[in-house]
Image (tube, rainbow, N blue to C red; front, side, top):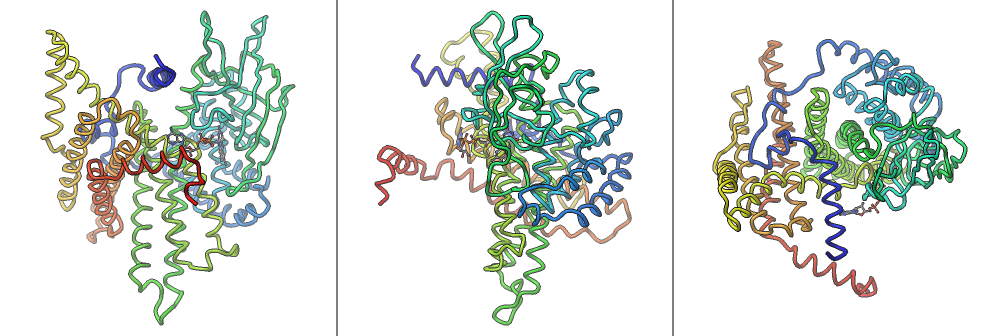
Length: 596
Ligand SMILES: Cc1cc2nc3c(=O)[nH]c(=O)nc-3n(C[C@H](O)[C@H](O)[C@H](O)COP(=O)(O)OP(=O)(O)OC[C@H]3O[C@@H](n4cnc5c(N)ncnc54)[C@H](O)[C@@H]3O)c2cc1C
């Protein structure tokens, strides 16, 4: 086996261990790749529970008042610091422990309700929303999910109130996108009472202001010479904890403290191991599922601000004796921002509901939400920036800050390229295994193999000829529902064809994977939008409203999304991929001097 094959085997083994242990439920996204519409995951459109709504409304009212009066995003950006008074205020309202159980002082909110809170913060200040996410969505999440009762009792009350802050430390120099490549070492002391940690972490939000850090380090696997990642609860007062850089100067979200630290022979008691030994990556990925839903909520909030700003300017700024809003190229941008903001909210709500319902394995959907909302927000900000023209460029308006702040979204919590490839590969695994069954049997026929291959062949054929049912309740949405069903069949056909055409090399063909993942993301987004429109029509009917709600932006989203999906799928066979690879290869082998 050569080095490349060895690396590939290692990656596959890691991915299998992380993602594919135990029986696989057919979730919504995996269903799409099989040509199914798993309707009970996405319909009817989820709503925050009746019992929870009054408390959510009350908290939102309190939060809005606090943010309007006491949060100054421009000052936070200028000072590159979130004042303690803001952190204390958020703690008082309960934002720093929104989903923690009431017994620890939390609100015990669902993830859907929590997303509404984060959307409200994301509307105003990305530094503050990233700070809250780092503390709550990922910082103390591991403790909430994997902590023992003793650990939770010891750590949670102060973290939930905001008296103490949390951070989540995975990234290192050698472990960025390749998160499994953590190098920080943890070895058990001779008396077995503690672990000794050594190594460095970088780019860690809240590192310098946190009193509890969830730190990932490698521990030996008993009886082997191998190691695996384990999660530890580390406090900065432990001897050997060294803050190398408390606040790394950076482009955006300047109010957050992003730091580098080293652990030098830090003794961490055995009681501070979080979750099973050697399962730290599983802890990390599970935690990130939560972080990605609140990411979606923050992006939704920011997109709504883009829309408000765009409309305000387009209605007031006059050029050529007209308001800007009278020009079609401005209208186009405003319509697109409105359509995307509607879809982002729908997708966030549906994905958060998967967590609340305790559904199994929604890692694909949270990855889709993260990539989709961060990419759309970037477009929204670019559009509103353009509408403001030269004025957007100056620091008296929030747009240049919003632009700088939004750029991290496509990189943090999994770079979008890595997640895009992940979505395609994990999604294609189901149909890919069925094709493998058929292929293996053709090569080496056996009675058992024949029956499995027959079942696999039937499943593939069914998915290709059958248009899945999309069960909307509102009569007026039937045509859109049928259209979505046809797109899913078209998608499934295209995935099958790609698998048959490219076979195993598809694992490395990221340009093909990107189109498949993009189409899948738009199918998921369209589903959430359709479900939301349906829910709103039904709810208006129940409330006796005869006038149908205005869904022009939502309908535009469905049209544009459908056009994009067809474009991605057409690109699977009609593309410039060979030319792209050849041009890149030429640059990469000859260096940048060629360009001159
Ligand atoms: C402001 C900020 C806050 C952060 N907060 C935290 C935190 O609180 N905790 C934490 O643990 N980490 C944190 N991070 C780290 C963040 O998660 C990493 O930056 C991110 O995972 C990317 O890793 P990297 O920067 O090493 O980029 P690299 O891994 O070097 O990747 C660089 C680029 O290469 C491309 N790329 C990489 N791999 C692939 C691939 N397989 N296929 C295609 N393209 C690829 C992508 O375009 C990617 O953007 C933070 C980072 C920043 C900037």
